[in-house]
Length: 476
Ligand SMILES: [Fe+2]
Ligand SMILES: [Fe+2]
Image (cartoon, helix red, strand yellow):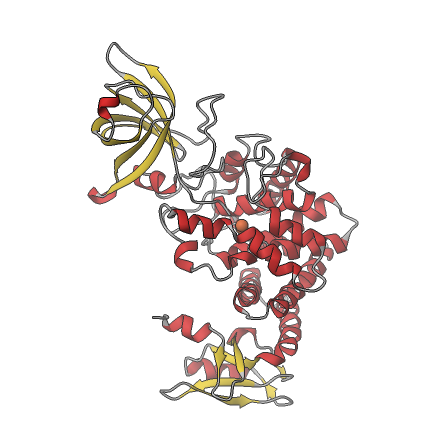
């Protein structure tokens, strides 16, 4: 059953066959209308004309609608272009309004842009959707070219939720800021990189929200669905006229990693273009810093520290450094805009860490190869613990075959987002796979699979094993 909010914001179809898209009340400018506005009325929620082309719309109308708790109006699909023109004019006015506080301006502009990107994810015609997002990228690059720092405030560094649309706007803004730093004299390129950032996850169109925001491990089928989004997005955009090459590259290659362990093609080093490298840095920065249903936000410096822990594996170190400098500069100018550093994320409990284990910058996936060199590759802070944990063998190497499929109790000695140190009364074997029952909050049990990546004898009859969580959830 669709929720009430979803029913309001979905594209509507009248019995006549005309389709309407929803427009938030605050996105409508005080003006002589260049498009028809409809509203839903009666118990059957029939769509009726409210005000037509050539008729003024002003503050009084807006207030009256708000009093009636009407938050969305509807515009016929074929008038989308006129709506977009009005929207960019309104946003430009809001962006430059000296009477309005910065927080208010930023909130309205962000909300409207997110709405436009959301439409791009919903519109049946991708061409129309791309046109809408192109308008935003044009507006963004114009604001950026004004040279003030106002534009950077559109990068939400506070405790924003990670859901696709907020994420896409953030990646658009971030890619623009990076592009300006790298190529200050090429405004056309800035716009392309902003557009690429705004569209990079468009291949997630059609993936159910329950999968996108799933808490915990994805099933193999769900992981395949997610993993297909870069190529799906790329195909969608190549079918749309005049999408710049840089945008196509960002959409297709933003999950590639320098060491070749990314997807979809496993490209390495120089085979990954500049646009995709930029997108990868901003994409993961936003994915780590955002708030998830199962954990609090990660502050900017902590996010950058995590990203810098495995140099040269995932990100282009030069681009990561430039982004680090930009973030530092923004924080120096106004530290209040970000989640404060030095505070532990709100739920760094055993439960929170375990929940968070899949969101790993090293990119653990069920099909990722085991790295044998430098066995302890945990890049996250560890937390000491001393709890008994039930373990069950899923796959066992050479030794202790009698235990195959059997259970044993091990002791957890420390835990990080990426893995754990456990101690057992038997010598585990490299690459053994175990299922651990981890105690969570309020007596809950989290079952997680781990792979043994390091073994050491700790006493006559005890062995320590470094284990890594095997998870399938992607970053970004
Ligand atoms: Fe993505
Ligand atoms: Fe992303």
